Image 1 (spheres, rainbow, N blue to C red):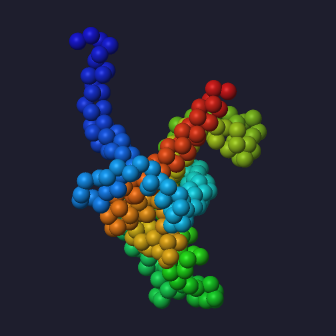
Image 2: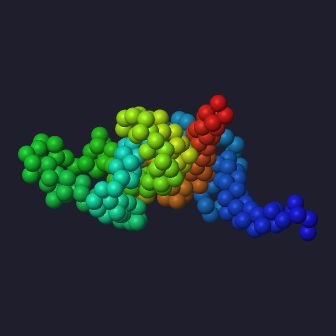
Image 3: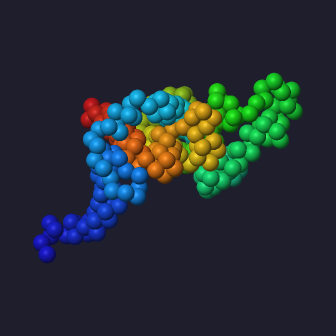
Length: 288
């Protein structure tokens, strides 16, 4: 075998599996989005009718807006807190390993388990949150957190943030270990303040890790499903519905596979556009 074909020989099996399990189903989903199919009879091609129905569907718009709220909150809270905790716990402080393990521990639990835990925390009667508010004299703030359309979405996102923050912290910790201590020490000798070290040294050197964190956070927020399904099932009144859950409901509960596939295609397109735009911006910055 010629040397130039050796890499392709090693890649052939993974590429074959990727084609069968990822590319193939993706293309087939795009085809199904152009059909009317109940999952049992043969799909009936109907063109873009599903998409025309989709863009006149108020539940779709509610789910889309909820996904963007999820994205904004995920970008603001877990990323910022995770970076802060990573910098704090990268220093030589007492019980640092224990703190890291405690903060990361929610990632060990399945989202279903975390959903059950937080559903109990949010219980109107006997829940930890309402009991705590009552105990400290803020009884007027107690409510049914998951049954109130004004608070349900943020309550669900809160549970997801609790889980994701530890993961972000771990990623930033791995990035911080790659920064040479001599660089930090040199900045101290030159008289740089803590903020200047963070702004002009640590943050730029963390750029590769930040790219990974942002991309993973985007994907996690746009494909949110587990917590919604476990804690509210999209209610009350679709106030917590997201695209992934709405797709599941239409495809596997209402047996409207074609319509569910069209939601999946829209979700894929949004995710793809966001990630490509972000990576192109990062690439442009590196070239400059």
